Image (cartoon, rainbow, N blue to C red):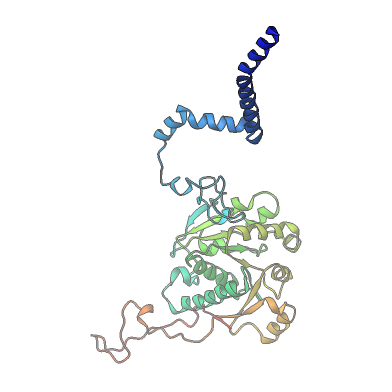
Length: 362
């Protein structure tokens, strides 16, 4: 009995301790079951270590902002513009896409003393005749804004009616428009003459591009000071109709559209060759140049019937006998009102050469 009593007494003394230990263990297990430990991934561990490292602290003390990086400090990687808009704003971020139109071309200085005198946009920029071409430029800009027209063919009923002069004058003035990049393409490959009119020596051009001897970018030249771009005709050739109607020329126009806002195509005479018909179908619009006192109305009506009406913007009347009003100070070095008399007591009058080239858009 004594042994049993001693055993019971010992069990009673240690029971509460064992029970307390057991309860604490069970409570700890329950807490762990309610709050299980989350296993960190390797990337999270690496980020925590990196954030606590002294290397990061040193880097933060040495990095300095600049004008090139300040606006992209908190921006995600890539261009700051929506997809597809990076080409219009190169430099918006450090790794923005380079635009297709940011290219370099050989430049020529065009002098008014060397060019064809009828290029009044260069030789007489303040004349009333040049103002007629500015009016024509306005119509082209309006067509581009309202109807999204960018490529225009300049043709004529016959030879010697002034289509090349009209194309170059129009292109020169378009290039002077703020924010506009204009290209003139000499597509009259049987008799290319744009470089001769401009007084520059650029013997290679569209003919060599179509023949696979030259790339388009290497063939285009820049004309300063206006900033007009020109694709010369190059060497004359006879297989013009086959080349202009083929896929290579279509690719040239497509590539040029990506680089320039307006494209002026100097096409062969419409009344002699069929090349102009092909070019008009590839372009957005067309203008026909006729010469006053030379082109017959019957021929113009006949040619207009063969052309798509939706692409014909109008007819340019060249070398008209009409004397333009030029008594404004804008067109003269000195200005006198009609009622005023200059010191010499003689009325001033501006003599206008009736043979001067003039363009009137209808």
